[in-house]
Length: 479
Image 1: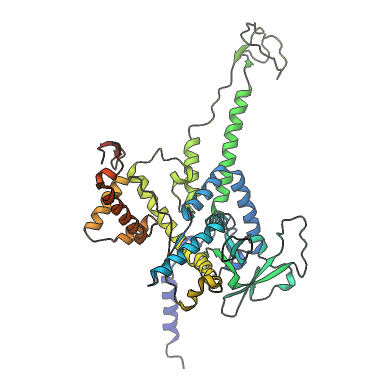
Image 2: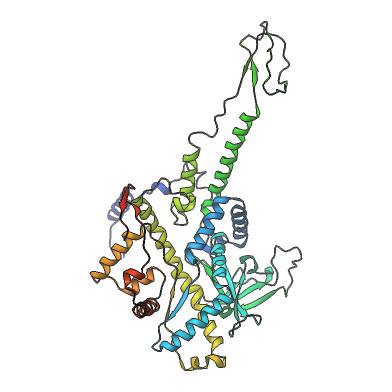
C-alpha cells in the first residue's frame, strides 16, 4: 500500500511545481523564434555530415583564396604553430645513439620537407577542419629511410558508394566495436577532378597504422573535423561586402564631376534643360550656365568615420574563434602599448603551445614510430634492434619577446633564484640545452686559445630606445 495519503501527495506535487526552476534561454517566443530556428538536437557526426562539411570546406577555401585577411590569418597561424619545423631530442642513456638518430631523422625531415608539410596540414586544419597524411614508401628519396608522408585532402576520405555505409562507418572511416579507427577509405582520385568516376574499386582501404588524422573534436563522439574558421565565415562575408559598398559609394560620388541644380519651382522661369543630360567638361574652360541654374558638386562622404572602427571590431571578432589577438590578425599594432600587447599575446601563445602538444601526439609521434620501424630494417641502424624504449621530446621554434632586454633580465633573476632551469629556458627558445652548452663550451675554449676575453669576443650593441609599460620611450644604454 502507498505509505502517503492523497492529501500529502497533493501537497508534495504543489511544492514541486513551486520550486521548479525556469531558464530564460529555454523560452521560445515571438522575439527569439527566428534566432533559434536552426537549433537542433543532432549528434556530433550527424550535425557535421558529409554534405555539411563539404559546403563548409568549399566556402572556407573560397574565402581564404579571395580575402586577404583570411589568407593572412591562416598563414600566420601555420607559421607561428609550425615555424621552421620541430626538432627531435632523444632521451636515452646512450649519447652516441641519441646523436646518430637525431642527425639521421633531421636529414630525413629535410629531404621529405616535413616542416612544409606540417604547415600545409595546419592550414588545412584551419580551412578544411582536418588534415590527413598517408605514411607510404618513396624510393626516390635520397635518404636511407624511404618513408614518406603523403598529404591527402579531406575530400578523398569518404564513402565512395552509399551501399558501403554501415553502423561502424563515419564518412570514410571504419571503427571497431570499441570506437577505435580501423580502416580509412581513400578515394584514388579527388572527387573534384573532371575525370573522377565513382565505382566499386575507386578507393583504397588504408589501415590505421598508415594514416594520420589530425583534427580538433569539439563535441564528444565527433569523428570528422569542421573548419576552425566556420564561425567567422559570415563575418568575412560582411567585411568584404561592407568594404565593397564603401568603395562603390565613393566611386559613385567621384564619377559626378558636377551637377546642375536650380532653386526655381517647377513652374518657374529657368531655362529648359534636358533631365539627366550629360555635358563633357574641358580642362581650364570658362562657360556660362543656363539661366536660372547653378553648378554644384556631390560631396564624397565615403569612407565614413565608422569604417575603420567597424573593420577593427569585425576583425577582432573573426580572430577570436582562433584565439588570435587583433594585432596579429590585422598585422597592425599601432594602437597597442607594451603591456596590452604582451597581455593579448599570452592567450595566443598558450593556444599555440596546446596546438603543438596536440601535433606531437597526433602527428609527430606517429611519424617517428614509423620512421624507427623502417630504420630498424636497415643495416645502418642495426643497433636500434636492441633498443626497445625511445624516450624523446620535440622542440619547436621559440617565440620572440617584445622586449628582449626585459626578458633577459627576468631570465637572469629566475636562474639566480633557482625557480627555473637551463633546460626550461632553452626550451622556451626552441633549443636543446645540452647542444647549446656544448657549443658554448667550444666557443669559450677557442676564445682562451686565441687569447680573447668574453668582452672582446662579444659583439658591441648600440644604445637603443626602450619602452615602459605605458608605451613611453625610455633611453637605454648599450650593454
